[in-house]
Amino acid sequence: MTILDGKKISNDIKDEIALDVQRMKERGERVPHLAAILVGDDGASLTYVGSKVRACERVGFESTLVKLPDTTTEEELLQKIKELNESEHIDGFIVQLPLPKQINEEKVLNAVDPSKDVDGFHPENFGRMALEMESFIPATPFGILQLLERHQVETKGKHTVVIGRSHIVGRPMSILMSQKGKAGNSTVTLTHSHTKDLSEFTKKADIIIVALGVPEFLTEDMVKEGVVIIDVGISRVPDETKPRGYAIKGDVHFDRVSKKASYITPVPGGVGPMTIAMLLKNTLIARERQLK
Ligand code: NAD
Image (tube, rainbow, N blue to C red; front, side, top):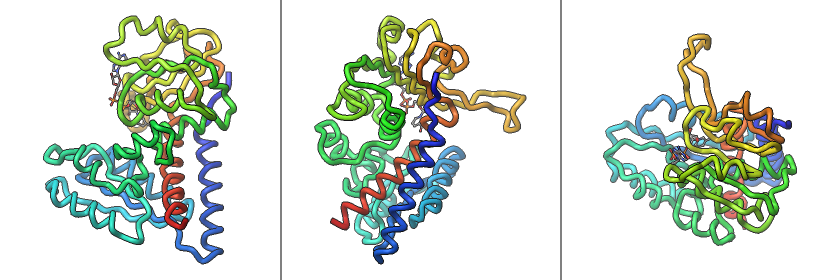
């Protein structure tokens, strides 16, 4: 069994990006600049945005954090997005989700200029991705492709089962795994909460990508020997023995499933760190496209 080490691979990717930034500086070019908009003070969102900003520093990007109160109106947020769309100094930006309930998420995501949409959530980027055209691939799916590719996990002709059909993970993953090219050419089954007899699909799968948010959902009786497991789930489970009072669990029962798997991602240290690395990669791509 081989661990798909997201911590190591994400560090390799960050090192490669840092080298590209160094070369940009040597050529006298402006370095990539990522901005993040955070509305309100949700604890988890603050942590995520904080890690994104620190990651920018690590690779030599410029970063801007736009913090808005949770009383911000939709119009005020759309105005801020317009400013970032028009700013010559910002190459890419993200709007941290979830947003307060007075704000329509779809309207906000649609307002981001697709050429700066480094989260890849704009319908134009999603459509272009589905058509195998130049786009921004959402960071988590992009990270999963890199994990598979850099560990040379064969996907061609394999049967991939994706569990969960969210717009940010499951659905794009199902599209990407069936595309032509590296970490693709797979036969894909997309399963969700209305799937009957899920085990009948997972037991036949060569690769299982699990993104549903239910701790330790996938157990060893649901998989075959030699399966490749990608665990996207991140849940906080109360645990008195941990200093913070909770443990981080994935959607896979790691101890039991890892005994049958050929490759598996741990949680934490698997898909999570890849997501931030690929957000940086998308920002670098945005900058390079602007320079062309
Ligand atoms: P979501 O809540 O938007 O969607 C969950 C999906 O799971 C739905 O499509 C639903 O149909 C499906 N589902 C629910 N119960 C099911 C069942 N019993 N059988 C089959 N399918 C079922 O989820 P999301 O935003 O994709 O997030 C999923 C998990 O991944 C969460 O734990 C989230 O925190 C985590 N996540 C991690 C990263 C990362 O960087 N590692 C990124 C995004 C999300």
